[in-house]
Image (cartoon, rainbow, N blue to C red; front, side):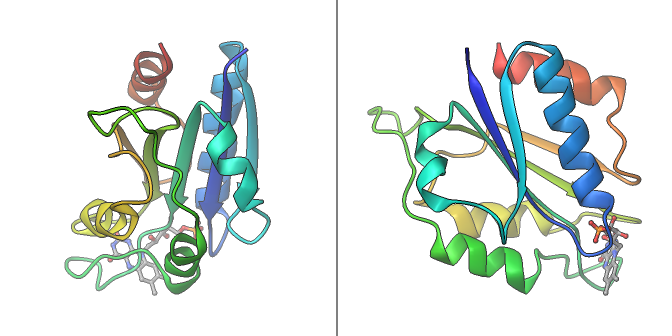
Length: 147
Ligand SMILES: Cc1cc2nc3c(=O)[nH]c(=O)nc-3n(C[C@H](O)[C@H](O)[C@H](O)COP(=O)(O)O)c2cc1C
C-alpha cells in the first residue's frame, strides 16, 4: 500500500480543511494517508512516505508579495533533507504543494519552492483552493500524481 503524508500550516482552518480533503481523496484511492499540522509533524516520518503534500495558506498584500508564513518557513528550515537519491533528483517521496487564498497566489508557490530547494525533490504538483474544498480538477490531478 502506498503512503502519503499531508502537512499543513493553517491560520484560520481553511488550509487544514483542504489538507483533510486531499487525504480523504487519497484514502478513497487506497492510499494510507495521514494529515498533520506543521507543529505536530514528526520529521523522521517524512522520508518514509511515498507522497508528501506540503501546504500553507497564502499571506501577502492580496495582489502582490505572496509568501508562506513564518511557522511554515520555520518548519521547512527544521526539516531534514528528504530528497530521493535517484540520479535525476526525483525519487521518494514525490512532492506536491497546496495553498488556499482569496484573490491571488502570485509568488506563493515560487516562494515555497525556493524554501524547499535541496530538501525535497522538485514538487510535481501544485493545488490551490479559495475555500478548502477539493474540485473535480483537483481530484483528477491527484489521481494522475499518485498513479
Ligand atoms: C494577513 C493576511 C494576508 C493575506 N494575503 C493574501 C494574499 O496576498 N493573497 C490572497 O489571495 N489571499 C490572502 N489572504 C487570504 C488567505 O490566504 C485565505 O483566507 C486563506 O484561505 C486562509 O487560510 P487558513 O484558513 O488556512 O489560514 C490573506 C489573509 C490574511 C489574514
